[in-house]
Image (tube, rainbow, N blue to C red):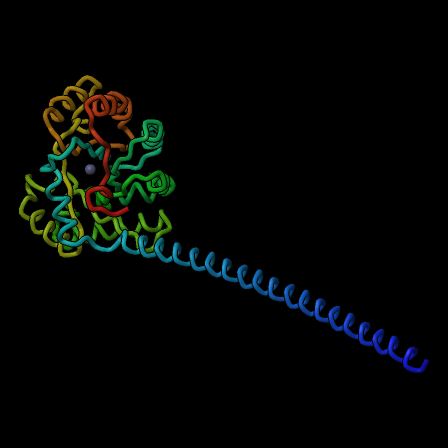
Length: 294
Ligand SMILES: [Zn+2]
């Protein structure tokens, strides 16, 4: 009897212990699994977050680098590509250029039209006009147009008094543009000599100034087609006649126009000019395309 009573009790106890042990083991396994899965998820989350942060930082660094590089002085190759702009024969391209602005009475209309036509242009702005219309030069820049430099005063006697005076005019206008755009390191990179870079009573000085600008990483650009919109008392007919006469048979066109306050006729002729270029397979380009910077 003794045996009979004791044995089942022993077996029961063992069974219970075994069950408890298994139960504890299962709990442990479950808890460990949960912990492992949680840790995995957390570490995966942390990794994904780190990757995201790294990506943002990398993109920011690239953007900052591009912004920094965008305004570095031009190297010789970049200056040469601007100097040989008219020799390009690969495809038809046109650079619309507007001097002497911005002005409240003409520039906004030109910008509206360019936006509507999806055309980018180059504006050679005057320091005095940027001082008066900083918002307009900012709009030009933000809408993807190139902001070139046309000096500060447009007074030949002042600008062409010495090569240093040319550089001073460039720098003065450049600082005003930089302030208007809110970009401290802004550099216009391309200068358009008031009255053109050759000929006239200041021809020799202009050649020296061109060299001085080049030494400072600044190119200069004239034109090979025009509208005579700033000469005498133009009419739409005269502007278009000059336009057709000077763009004819050219593959790479730099067209001179003006967006000073009294140049509304230029704006009125612009749709026909843009249509001509589009109908004849020209691509619209800016200085960004020539120097290969974005
Ligand atoms: Zn001018």
